[in-house]
Image (tube, rainbow, N blue to C red; front, side):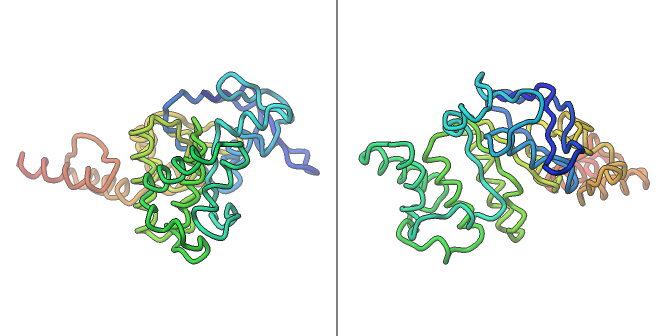
Length: 275
């Protein structure tokens, strides 16, 4: 679905590349978590996908189309983006106006537009709020409206660029659950940009960046096995990983390293029953 081939990018007037000879393939329907410390290049990669930035060298393709100034309009039909601050995406005075904005730009007929708006708001549990002012909603609700606006345009890919960073723990949990549901039900290609490994645990594959290069890519469980070494590339091991590490030090056997808190509890219970 998406391919980076020897891509390099630098921000003017800097002469150092943020990403350098970068290669990455993302398959259709896959959930990828791009993780890394601030300045590792992960947000730059996200913006290169839908043409907010253009590479200095190399080629980025989306569904076989090379990202360029000439193809931006077509690319953005395929790729939707959800940013850190949803207020930056609001243009309408009501929720329904805001979701309609992108459809109007695409020239979607009115009857079809109404159906798409209703459908997308239902998908994010915001159907009862369509006449509310977006600016007066909670942080989590604002993100849901931003997601509804993207879903209404029916993209093949949705990129969440640090979309949970301004939410409280409850809002983060709800948004991750929603992303999981959208990915599973609609087989969307999902890319989450984050520095939080708790979020990355739900992805099919994690790509960890450091200094603009791929430091690791593979299943989340494999990444978590690096334990405290993750701090060398600016990543903080999860609470579950730290607990697992301490259990090992005390010779408490667990079959495999747990990804989530629920897995940790289940593994501890299984271990207890065996004793």
